[in-house]
Amino acid sequence: MTGKAILFGEHAVVYGVPAIAIPIDRHLSVEVIGSGHGPELAADCWKVAVRLDVEQPDARALQQAFGLALDLTPRCPHRIIARVDSEIPRSAGLGSSAALSVALVRALAGYAGESLAPDEELSRAAEIEKIFHANPSGIDHSVVAIGRPIVFRKQGGAEAGVDLGRIFKLVIATAGSHGGTAARVQALARRRQSMAELYQNAFAAIGQVVERALLALKKGDAAEVGALMDFNQGLLNALGVSSPELERGLGVAREAGALGAKLSGAGGGGAFLALCDDDPQPVLRALRGAGFEPFVTTLAPDGQGKALIEEIGQAARR
Picture 1 (cartoon, rainbow, N blue to C red):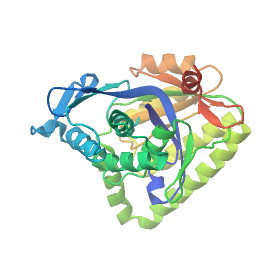
Picture 2 (cartoon, rainbow, N blue to C red; picture 1 turned 135 degrees about the vertical axis):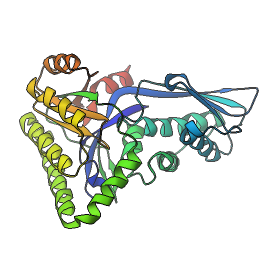
Picture 3 (tube, rainbow, N blue to C red; picture 1 turned 90 degrees about the horizontal axis):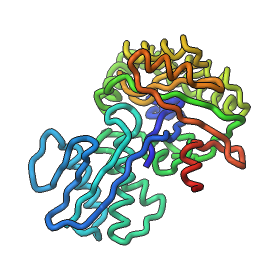
Picture 4 (tube, helix red, strand yellow; picture 1 turned 180 degrees about the vertical axis):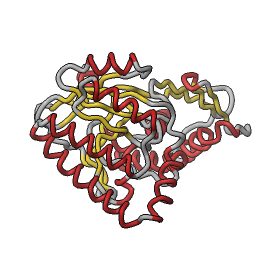
């Protein structure tokens, strides 16, 4: 499974505003094999292994997620090991829990000989995501499962049909851990209670940014997309979900020539992305020089003008 980034509209999506999400060229896989003992989830990439018959307070969420994934796959034998291999950093806003949720659902169902319809796959993954995010919007596991850029609306779900007028190159990096999505969303909800009207106006403005961004992406207007990313970031900063380290990374990217830059996901740390003109190398070099670990994800139109992630699309065609 791929990771994900939110191009526009995070946080406000919980309050009914649409959002645009993209998969990224970072992957997580789960392989299920037979075992001589009870179920185990082994993630050497995260230096953790969990079993269901042992108390593991430091890995409680993973333990609960694995147990629920098995409960949701009743035909799957329990004498198994589920091996996780991931390039996606945890607690960084790049969808590691969503990728794990979808990958567990697919791997366990496959081992049990089940063929899941897309709706059932999403339903099971959503139940697992609740362990990590309490009340997830649904956007993360939707974009991970679909594997293409999506427009997500809380009531209508995911629409995998973002129109694209040109190639867009995005540099993505992280500014440490965000401390957990659920905690960030709950903190935002508490702040909103004290200034409900102002926060609602900010959410409405983010909704306008998303709709305008969809038109700019369709036109291939990179300058406008970048300006909208900066505007969206200003609103997110006003909502209190940015951080000094995120702002430092965004500033470095803009100084190096990025057309626009914003955080992705929960904020308070975690991921950010910067839109580059044709050459992302100046932004990559500047971020590396500032101590970040950036990578490029390329958003490209397919034969019908719909957006895909170029690296992922090429892999799928091989």
